[in-house]
Image (cartoon, rainbow, N blue to C red; front, top):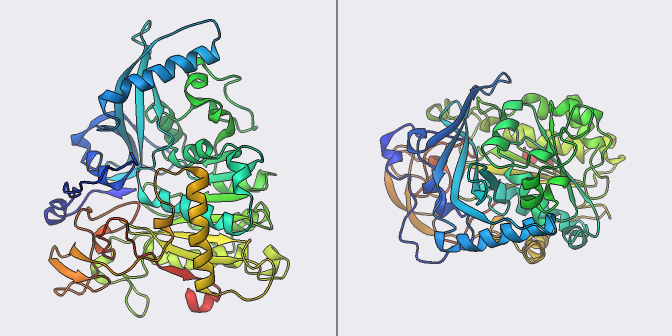
Length: 493
């Protein structure tokens, strides 16, 4: 989630620089965030309702998308016609593309929960039958790309046969806790043909919004008994999704209840579950909770990997671990990052109950470029053969495997940039106080000693609680990603 900036001095630097001349292949590149970042009044509100699950006012706002440009729309129209012919042999139907939009799911108006790009089209014979399709290849926010990159690179580092899973030669069980607009599970199912993805979302209004307004496949919705709500997909689901929808199962359930009642063993688990108040529920990270114990029981014992989206706070706390007074009201979650990481590692890989008495796993965090988020990774694959490992060895392995992931999945973005250790860079940043400064990477503002942000970023975000106090990252393609390894929880948390 991203919140509205609190001061005009920060809003003035909201839009990314337009001086970028390189061609950007990734339609979800952060460069395009200026198209959907605006306030609710800048777009068209197409859904608005009140949640009874603690998320407040839930709305979806539409914004224009510049890509794909109109010159490419006929290509999609021909693809839709071809897909219809494949699913309905002997019949022909022509389609017309209306255009592409960004759809932003908001909680309480000022919090951006998730962002997706949709295609709108209709059959020429039925101009009133407009269908929307979320673009599965497009991840609009950096923290999702970070979760995918570090998660899959870690899986590949555990000797998991990712190639066969990608090509559909073996199944890969994935659980996504927290749905939002559905970008993450849809991306995984589209890129990994063997992926069978379960999604758990507590709020039925969020589920409804993702389907009605954000183009997530409706056939994915499941009943409490584990059956599909719809016995068969409708015509357009078959045309648009080419089987992807049949590998997605979307459950309306409390996460703890779901994990306690499932018999599935998951290869990967993604956790991204903040509520309307920007809080990561304690039940999802309390080391004494039934949730974490059950999560460990359902995680594959040899290569099971969990990736958790968290707000960053490591560079913002005082030396004694307390929150600076100036940030007291902007970090509802960040102060708990250490406790969350320790809980996940201790329960999933660090004690006898989860790993048969052996410390046979690894936990680490990776800071996310562009926004103040941290990807927490806990994996049972590292250390399974015993012996010692060090940070450099693990980092080199992750870098090597990230290149492999890039190649195997044909990602629209570089997995490597979310894993690699970047070099020092120089540039212009903006501090929380509004002071512009030309500084060396990792130095603070000379006016108030805060860390600096990229000049194109707004000040607050659900995807990072305060983007105006993140470390400077200004050179395209160069990110200073710090891996904090958790071999010794007492030292690292």
